[in-house]
Image 1 (cartoon, one colour):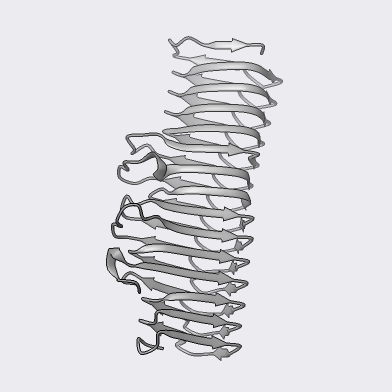
Image 2 (tube, rainbow, N blue to C red; image 1 turned 90 degrees about the vertical axis):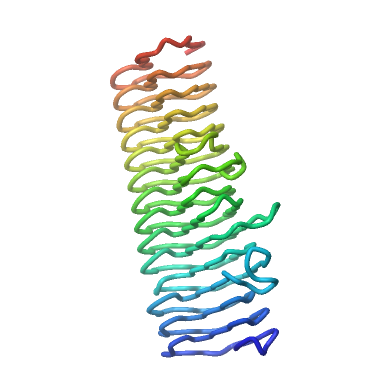
Length: 365
């Protein structure tokens, strides 16, 4: 299909052994339903047009199962344009997964989608260009699965300072070769009742590049996130290049059996309630140059410290820190405010303060 068509439709077709199974270029909207695209070089390709894809089975591609180029999309092109894509009840297996290029306003949504066994990232979104205020680029997924990809399960990278929002609700990400979720350049991340486990690096990795100008660009709101058994950290947020703290708020987090830290924060302000940080290889919580406010946590049986802080202000309320193989709390050049916390049966110290000239407030320990 080419630009002669405002809308292209295809339904209940099987395409095999082609260079490209379905190609739509300069078409306003492609509506594709019930397709099976098998063993093509590229499964589906959409260039400068919007996409509704449902009940599709894409497998065996040698490049991308689904490729979208929205760098000059319908609706105006360039920074003034927009792009929308909807995927529902689709399965993408093998190949290079689902790749999106965009320099315009983006609204990308996946519901009940399975992406497995990609030889690169599962979902790979590359953003460029500067958008007019108050445009936001959104990547959203509900009740989807991303597993066994050679790269990261979900990879979003941006080259500029525009707001990006990533929403995950009921998503399972597991056994990918790199990170489960990787936000390179930072993003606002909203997670509800999702998991990212047994990945080759961290469960969720948010790292900022350059210097952003808005706290909202780096806010993570996480509820019911489970990150277990990852080769590095459960959740890793690094904003060391930023003039401001990144922001993390969590509740009901479950970070267990990660090979490095359960939670690793660098230049972050973090508030968390009702969580488990247990049996991680190094620290249950590791924070440098950050600000922590935590309550009702169980931090136990970690390979080194329950909580480790460097140049960090830390408030802790109503929790238990026990069974860690070094200290329950190890703080260097940090400020502590703790109340109603049980600290017991740690191998070395209950609380260790190093090089600290700050006032410490410890009550009812």
